[in-house]
Image (cartoon, rainbow over all chains, first blue to last red; front, side, top):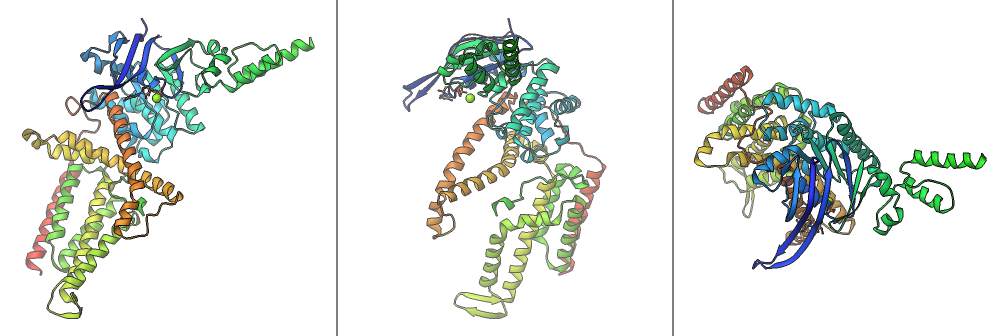
Length: 288
Length: 268
Ligand SMILES: Nc1ncnc2c1ncn2[C@@H]1O[C@H](COP(=O)(O)OP(=O)(O)O)[C@@H](O)[C@H]1O
Ligand SMILES: [Mg+2]
């Protein structure tokens, strides 16, 4: 069993009127199956309202399943006594960088999580040191978060989660409010954590360029997982993605157009470099 | 103007004042405020001015930065001054018209009140400028700790304060942004009488409140995600410990208080 395993997970938001009668039911998660192995970097794609955040909050025990089950590192999230251990195992980085920084000084914010789980003072300092270094924010440790750029704030938030030494971190659209530079900073930090510390990463996003390096992708719509596979498998299905009004990486799109125009270019091209190589090899074969 | 508020903000610097235990600074501020209200005469004023000047100097916070914080209360100062000036009865009347009169006591009171207010703001903002909100609330939490025994939720209050302080600058910036956005759409926050002005504030206040509640929601979630469950079982990254510097400062504060009292009693 992987570190995150969901089986037929269902979550319903029930809205009631004053008398307690059910007014409406939103099924935010509908029979979701998920299996993430330890140390993987996986991505979840989907439109606004497709249930991505709801899924993320389950992994952190912030929401409880209506039906089905979810295990985090072998722990059943529905058991009351597992809530805190689950939160220690799976950290979460949220979308809005301002609304997840609690302290007014960078290093104090990074120390907030370890303080909550009762880490001794000396060890808190070591963890803060290490976490800030890992995201390249040591220089700013005494700064106020308000003076940082969006990308830097997000890196502080990542350090804050890292300091709790989780095995897995869920990133819920961490780049949605950032400029392209900030986006790159944050994605690079996530990949480094994955590569160097072996942290399992679940990246939720709707920027296609950010997921091409993931090992596995899940695509969600209306609470269901409608596609899953490696980036190459997913982005080979350009028509299907378009039908679901999802973007495709630019290089993939160009490759697709060229192929339909009659060039012999393989499906599932993800990056500009691969595209260039494919075009060059077409030229080679025409000459030869 | 709204961006000029420096109360509740932290000014990072490496100074002896910054390194003081927050409990000492809280105590000093309390004594300072008491002194401001008991002092009388030039001698007492001189003692307080000297103490404030020394503290500001040691703190390495630029005076200009602190004075900027006063801009936010200029109107308050003005009103206080005018009221005291025109409505205080006194022995010598220099000028009068209807209910207004300008008297010697009035002038004295006006100057005294304005100076008091300015000193009050400078002194208290020196504390918040040199103490991070976390330290401040840690200090409060520790100092008020005994109240826990009578079931006052000291930790919760301290946490609320520190979060409020963290979000003051963010909300101020947001107010500024919304104001500009609404002004670009033709909203008018300047003209009209008081009632009209209050009405004009609605397009500012509603988005501000909506966003504040959203933030509160997000923040609660983020705190929970990081295993926050209240004060029980928490450790501290920066536990409070007194050292020599703090002891010396306590002594200085007591000497200061004694001087102010002596000045009041013996030097009218
Ligand atoms: N607290 C809530 N109460 C009621 N409905 C909600 C709540 N949170 C989310 N929803 C609904 O659940 C669905 C999925 O939302 P969400 O998980 O936030 O999607 P995503 O993160 O993919 O944009 C949406 O239809 C949304 O309106
Ligand atoms: Mg979302």
